[in-house]
Length: 219
Image 1 (cartoon, rainbow, N blue to C red):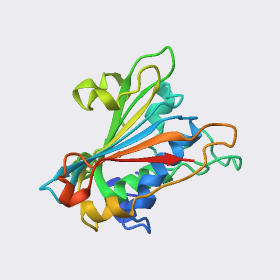
Image 2: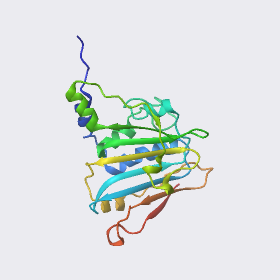
Image 3: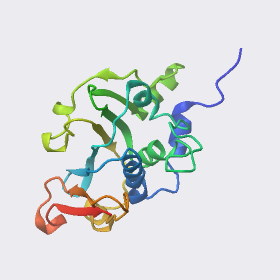
Image 4: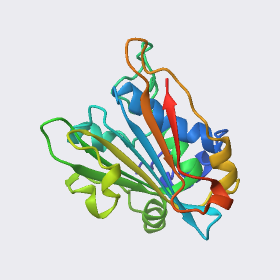
């Protein structure tokens, strides 16, 4: 009888020790938003115990994904642009690898223009539990689900877009304030477009801890 070439839970735990830092991990999600022609990208940091991160919510108004692309977007090694040298996301590992460097659960909502919101997720705890049982864990088939119960209304794109939520956040090496202080991003979406609004919300920390909600431009 054959065996699987790797135990998914242990392999993913090993991959968590990649050379990403927090800002590089966030940048992988932003890269995907830019590739999806997003004009507005928002990032909301929700604090835990005032100085640590409970969740990070990324939203964009890009093209959104259909159910097939949505289910596959969390697979390591899968990309709708695999080996495409014309853009980012060439090898299909960055977004998930960056996410698991920081947290144990990744949830994705997406809605293409004229379509409906669908949802799927990846959870390292569930994968490890299945490994212990000798069962293979699979990324769930996307289901219809509104993000309204999971994301503040101001962060939900109206007609199309994608929402990525990082939770079970256990690997931030710095305090929330330090991460926010270091996270300043300016990148060019396209010379023919106006700068798109890129909002960073510190999630309720007082001014003495993190300053006011910041707004930056992705150029």
